[in-house]
Structure formats: C-alpha cells, structure tokens
Picture 1 (tube, rainbow, N blue to C red):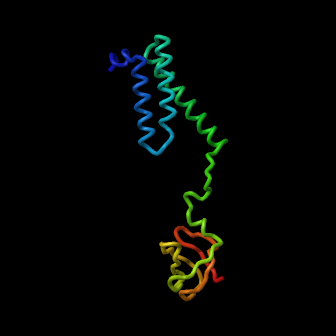
Picture 2: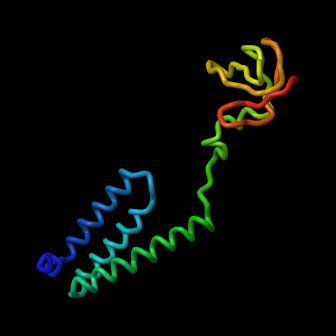
Picture 3: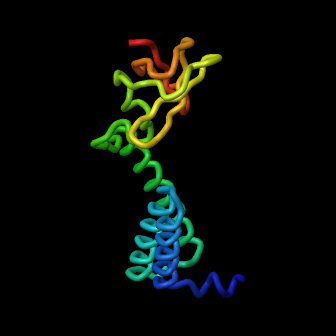
Length: 147
C-alpha cells in the first residue's frame, strides 16, 4: 500500500476527479462535485510541483472542505429560484379553485375530478354534484368547503 501511495501522480488525481464527477451525475446530491473540483485542482498542483503523497492528500482534504463549505454558504445566501414555486407541491395550485364533487363527502372524505384525475377531499358532509372550493391541502387531499 505504501508503494502505491508513493507512486501517485497528477493523472491519478484527474482520474479520481472524473470518477467523482460520474458519481455526482449518477447520484442525486451535489456533494461529489466539489470533491471532484478539489481532486482536479490537486492534480494541477501535483503536475506543477513534485510533492509527497501526504502533502497531496492534505491539499485534497483542505480543498474539499473549503469547496463544500463555500458552496453551502453560497447556496444559502443565493437560493435556487424556480419559475414555479409550487413545483413539488402541485396540490397547492388548486387552492381557491372551485370543483364539483364526484362522490359524496361521507365521514369527512370524498372525491372531486380535476381534469382526468380524481382527488381525495376532506370537508363537511356534502352530496355528490355540490360545488366546493379548495381552501387548503392536507397531504394528498384537498380541504374543501361549500361554495
């Protein structure tokens, strides 16, 4: 193991950076990207200056921590904005809209048709065909009241 560590050169770091970048693409997190950047920079430094494996590993470790912390601070100060603020909360788009009950609301539960989909609703006892207005979303259910 000691011999392998003593033979690490710049292209090893670049290959490691590529592997980390592939891991970043394959996994749904943004953690390996910054370690990949640190590995690539370490490879450039090793290419420019001959150094031992301990120094290389220390540079990689420090750069990884700095890049990860810097990215977290940047993202916290500059959150990613979406054109659709309710992208992952699709039920909230229906708040304020009026629908016709497809089934009776019995024991606090019924259904409305939205397009080609039936949505579960919660509300007071009402008969099918009654117009209801969505006032809130509770999990996968609309909270409704009579119009």
